[in-house]
Length: 120
Image 1 (cartoon, helix red, strand yellow):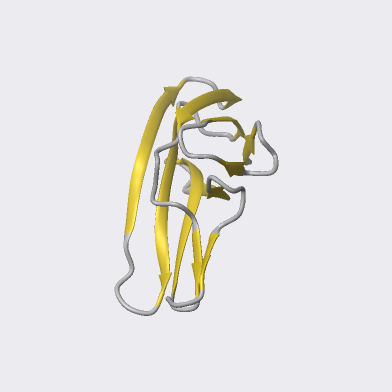
Image 2: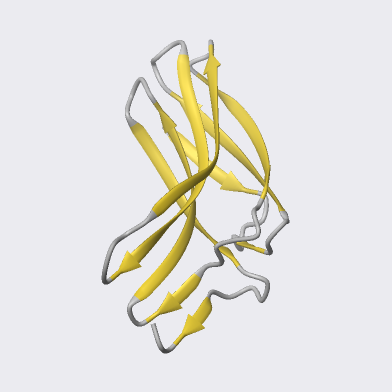
């Protein structure tokens, strides 16, 4: 079992804000290689793009436990919702030994909502 929780349950963040989270796991594997990352990706027509902005890895001796993380969010790119292109942000955690992955989508926006573009 792998679980990811964000301190801000609304998952809406302003650029430059602190994103705080907690990963919990319970597996029969020991030791555990736990990874957490923050990144963005595009969806829509044309070429897709993506980038990992922050990544942390921990080698943990216990088959179960809790791990906190805290990251300062970048200035962009901002979350966007258009007819042809969408920019989405997400936090992902994984356990290498089991292949288990969990992902939460977040919004990065100065207004609290994805930027809406009608012309792209």
